[in-house]
Amino acid sequence: MLALCLLTLSACATYPDISQSRSPCRMEPGGWCGFLRNGAVDVWPYAVASANAYTGDDDVFTDLGPVLERLERLPIADEAADKGFGYEIFAQYASGTEGQPDRQPIARILAFRGTDFDGFTDIFYGTLRNDQIELAQAAFEAERARPEFADGAEWIVAGHSLGGALATEVSIAHPHVRAFMFNTSPFYGGEDRVNDMQRTVFNERGEVLRKFARYDLAPAADVYTLNCAPRNGQFTKHKIRPLADCITWIAAYGDPDALKTVLANAVRKPMVECGDEGKPHPGVMPVVSEPCIHSARPEKEDPA
Image (cartoon, rainbow, N blue to C red; front, top):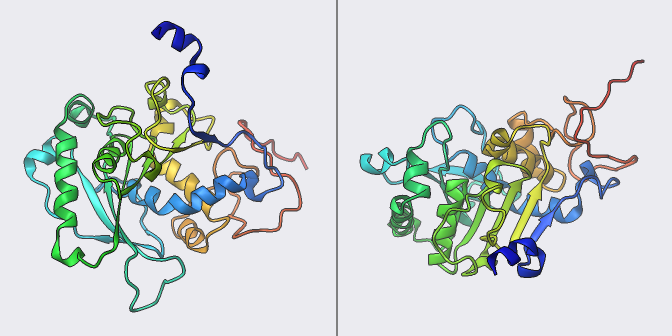
């Protein structure tokens, strides 16, 4: 039966995969379809938070933009840190409220650090054992119980790679908690369908973990597959910063706060988008007068 299912996979499982095919929306901003631009507007703060969960890394956003603020988290015990566990907490504010002195957070984001391919500590404890899952659940409960966070703001979990698997586990255990995952690991122990309507995934096409997830049910009801950097290798595609850059760039076609974040961090256009490498962002809802054709190859320079 298993062999038959693998041979006739489309008849055995339906994947809720919302993919951006190459250049189907050439007369839309950046060549990106409307549903994908809208999705990027919804998730870009969580992509930025997931990138900045890698505390101490040299490839984080130096400017979180107008809607995010990093908060002090509870200390992480040395034993947990030795297992590769880490996370950060961010306040999320409503779009368009920058500069308002009395603005209050609409949500708090707990973003889990993900898999570091330079070492195997977190892969061992996070992928093959339950240590990090238990640590993630305990951290979420402890942060949510802090008196200074008792204002009723929504809690959201997010993460990249292993961090996405940990966010999935927290979401499964807490039905009202939304989760946003990026290039997420397929190695988690919870039930796929539990609370899956509260979860959204953005994956880069061809990144290394997608090979392991090929025959698994998706951990979320909405799964977007991007092709931001078709010429990169599978390990480079897995990294969170290029994916977060791509999502935020796309979001900036519809969100002024995302555009400010793009400009503040000198985010470059996605490799696949039309235009030369140094193309500045066209801005929010630019007038499109000619097709923007996505390409897997660099554009040829004009000999003139």
